[in-house]
Length: 95
Image (cartoon, helix red, strand yellow):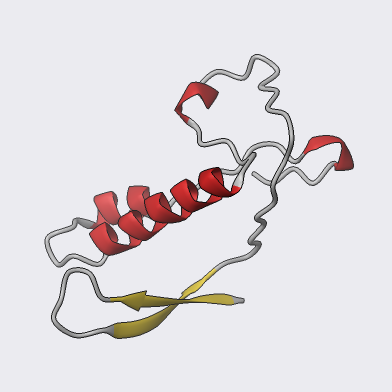
């Protein structure tokens, strides 16, 4: 599957491109429980529409930064790597 993207913030022209993905899950939860997992203090939780918009903004910023010609391959790999933790009692955990 692919998610269509539009690059328009950094250039005078727009470029439409597709970013492939294996699984894309976006869902709103009601309660955040970290179960003591270290590093989750750096995460964005998804409990509201505001949270979803914040995550979208961060992802779009990473796409824009990754598309810059001055971005190294290592920086691009880090910018385009995302980890999703959780999913709740329905066992829809993604890693």
